[in-house]
Image 1 (tube, rainbow, N blue to C red):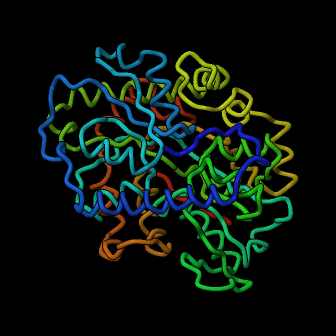
Image 2 (spheres, one colour):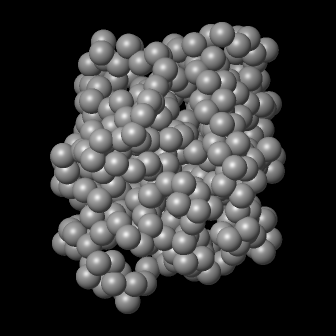
Length: 409
């Protein structure tokens, strides 16, 4: 298993051990590639939906999973009349996808680009039923990095090729005249940036040891790097792509088709958790902390508070330092809104076509963004769930199910 302790002192990190764990991340990607290309047989793939199956949540210990975990902590699934098991923590994206494909879990949060890969790269019948959260990620760098252009000739860690982090980072690099080297064979040119897939828990130690110049990842690893004095935030991803989704709530198509009432209740609980989180951020941080009753994550309360709880003083510092350049957007560090706007999915597919990705990604060339937005996402359940809590206005949005995307580097 990968070490997920975010509180380990940076000076104790062994750079050789860190790179050994990086190789685990690369093997993780290869394992997932095998899963999503049908090279690995799993017993649950053809199993019909069992009407008596309880809610089985799979999650990674990051703030991306907050709505699923809060729904469990506050017994919102039970309030819908559902049976639910304790959420299962996984150490990697490959593990959570394998468990999902095998039917061991049936409600998961996945990186939004990963769902595109799963459905169209492998024809696995996964469907996005809601957004899990918005923003919640950042580009964290060594103290000597003052602007994106300073990353030229250096290495940056990403959590996964098919991640919004990789997509946004490569957009930022392109906009600043830099090119990506996924497999550098020699010394990097001044305008090249090497990308390395790394386990999030290894990013802070690697940054502290000088093995990388920065990393882009979900919270609270950026907040942990800040509080441990390892690095500083150069840009928030939500300040590059306004109100972007990161992880999305993903379910199996057979459950949506064979158990629509059950599926509706699942989505109801998740939407109610997001609605509650918007106004109870401090309580949410307490529930998710390692000392909380559910011990859902390995992070101390101050780190989670830094992400979840609005801090005007800290926000002004980010504005002054340039981590926030679009203060008029009024973006929260992480926010919660469940409706999966089609324009986002369309824009994501367009950007993926211009993003360097390892593995067999030829399927992207054939994808029509508008068709993907209609086929990948099933919004029947989330529309009803949103209406039940007061409509989109309950999440601070205009009462319309369309929007336009804004990307500004």
